[in-house]
Length: 89
Image (cartoon, rainbow, N blue to C red; front, side, top):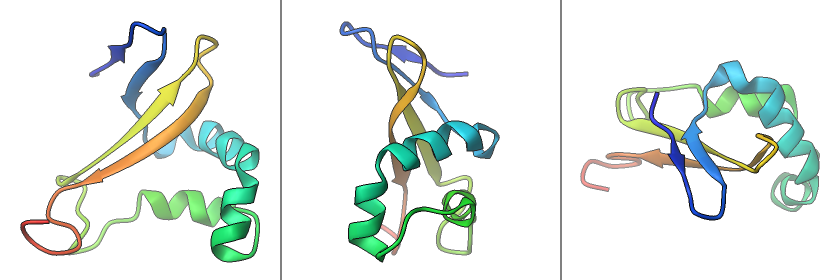
C-alpha cells in the first residue's frame, strides 16, 4: 500500500469501500456540505456511490485518497480520475 506521511504529521493513503465507516464519520462531520449540495445529509448510498464505476469512470483510472490526522481519523478525501468525464481530461 502506498502511504505518504507529510511533515505536518498528516497521512495520505488510498481509501476504499472497506473504509465505509471512516467515510461515514467524515460525511457526518461535513454534513453542511452535503446539505448545501443536495439539500440533505449524506446517506450510506452516497458513500457506496463513490466506489461505483462505469464505462467512463473505471476502477483502473481512479484513485481515492484519504487524509488522516495524527489520531488516524480521516479528515479529508480526494477522488482523482484519469480520462473523466472525457478522454484527455
